[in-house]
Image: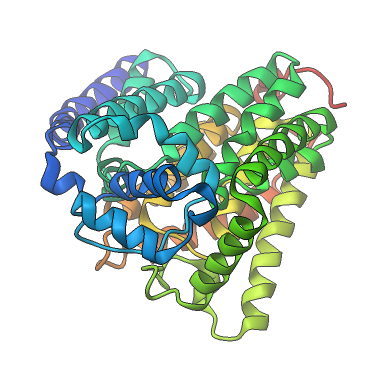
Length: 382
């Protein structure tokens, strides 16, 4: 059986290695005309707008149009990035758009490798396959080719988990301040930790986030904060202009505002229930926090599916393979079919719902398997 398993994994790796390498080559071969149409270019526009026009005018549309025209950015979207994201990208504004994107892409790749190294379970062969298949789905490569900040958040999430494992709850929570870069994909993770009794981790996140928020408020001022909140309200009221897809955004599957609020609340509640029931199993706490965050987001883009990879790695670390691998493979196959036009993404949404429900109802502490018990020898909550 062991030999057959290695042969199977070797065959899978051989089949996916070349397509994965081609995807990476295409990503790092992007040049200025392509880069100007990416989210990375819009990050740079936002940062330059703060540097040139003043941070209080970070959400001024006239100033944004000026900067976008000066960089020849071909596709205009009103800026909804957080002030923290705009500040984070400032060092890259000193580089040409092409060189900056190349260095930014190298950072994103490094962050993906860190996340994979810290979270992916199994032996060397299994881990190699998990790394290779990461670069095949369209949603992942869409996010990477756009320069989405999600891999940075994935790396900090993995670091947070490792610190928590070692009993360093305050810094583990502080690492989750990555939420401020792009809140919707990680927002429920700190609250899941709180529900699991990890009060110090939650406090570490709250203190770090508060410190960042105070610094940003001092920079952008009350006028800038008000403009940001107005922009978020505008984006929520104009989802088409923000290219929000109904098919894989849970809230957008319902017409009634009451129904939307109800399903988002249900997703958040299931996340906290799963975290509380598995409070001795931090892997499930993190997995539920990730899946719940994506489901409870009022808007989702295709590349947000990237966060399902660390959620899968967390799940595989504690759930026996015979139970976890088949449904995760089904979800992965649907992700391979996920494009802007295809039906795959809505099936991934269904998989997320089933996944979160399964985490919420599966046996909790005291009824876990011996394998799960051995994997959760971490510092006690509090």
